[in-house]
Amino acid sequence: MYDIITIGGATRDITFLTDKGKVIETPENLTEQALLCFEHGAKIRSDEIFLNFGSGGCNSAVTFAKLGFKVAVNCRIGKDDEGKTVINNLKERGINTDLVQVDENNKTGFSFVVLNKKDGDRVIFVYKGASDFIEINVNEIGNAKWLYLASIAGDWKEDLKEINKAVENNDIKLAWNPGATQISAGKAELENTLKNTEILIVNKDEAIELVQSDEKIKLDFNEITDTKILLTILKKWGPKNVIVTDGPEGAYIYDGEKILYAPATSKIKVDSTGAGDSFGSALVAGYMQNENIEMALRYGVLNSGNVVGEYGAQNGILSKDEIEKRLREVKVSCL
Image (tube, rainbow, N blue to C red):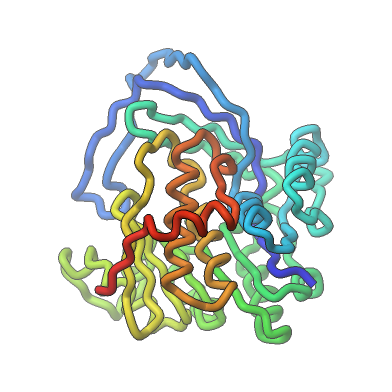
């Protein structure tokens, strides 16, 4: 039996560094509060690029493996050289690949990451490729203590049904970091899975969008941007623990009794790619040890804080010993 199976995408990433982008603030748009812009028609030069690996299913698996858990990843790649490279990377990191599907008709997913050297923020152009056609089967994912569900595409509603069956029939705990497709579908489409979720992880923009999807909830601007209110509403929808991340502002966790907050620990941010995956998976790993939400929060912010200090989503991931040596760096407060 696996300690955890991660489910989600697999991509080959190229990171393109540039200092030519201009950030334009758009605070009036709650879910698009800043834009990274370039001159129309310009040819943008980069003095440095990086080839890496990415996407939620694989990124999270790397964290769990680095932290000492027996992990398998359920993802889908193409029958191509990039797919072989993805498999080799997973195996080198100690991740079981028996549940990796090989697509005969579609290419391995690919991401083009445009990274603003001025502040480490980025825009990602994503080709999902084979990841869009992942097939989740309850019989394959039932042999684990935990499932970590990242963004999925394709026939994701049917996939959620299979995941719910696995959780309900096999005494499996589910950690869920829904993707944009699931968030935009709204509460009505996600209710059953939310009730089966041990840990729900969303960023603040996603939390706002998700809460706004319930037409019965009427909130003014100050209320819909209040993280405590967002946590409280999402908790009522069923998850045992709700986490809302707020980028450089830190992260919050609510278990129905107390709300804990921890600021971000990163001192230097060079690349925010993979920050969400490294946070969510490390938080779940910390929670898996003894269901201590404060410990989980410390794991999450330390891991993500280190990952944003290096280029690529899977570089900078900490080991258990490295995290435990730094636990006191995280100042957790009860709100």
